[in-house]
Image (tube, rainbow, N blue to C red; front, side, top):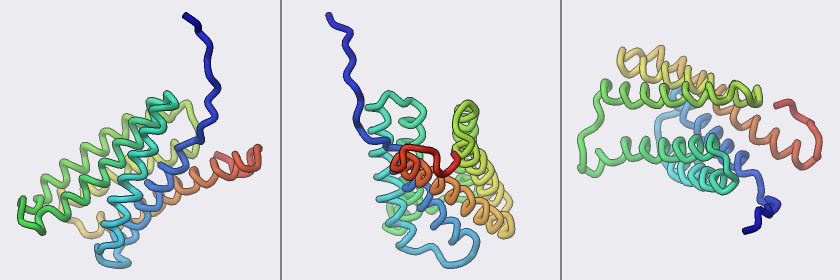
Length: 188
């Protein structure tokens, strides 16, 4: 048996996943901050770019042997799909609307998951640490807003979410630009 290795010339899937996450997170949190109501733009973005594109990026990370990327992108892709299902399934009468308590539990569990992933970023790029630390804070605030019923906490969460999504978008674009120029143009 030969132990020869084949060079990996496949593209870096992280920018796709980070853009899907970042742009969808910004869009939802512009709503959470109170700038426009929940509408189909968020739902469609959640299904396809936040959801499907991240799952595809996660599968591509699996092919590259990146456990962190696989876990993060597939999980957050399915987060977006479950969130859209939580919003839409009650409208077709198949299940009851979630209670604030159940929604708080859902968001708190995602916060716990994210805090665990944040620990995984501590030896990596500073920009990913910013993404995962701000996302942990975002989930904590959203859970608190649901548990407490506080509109103010929900709006504050919206601004944290805009920052979180923008930091993911910056990381994605930074990776694309740095790879295109074959040098560090944007610090990550």
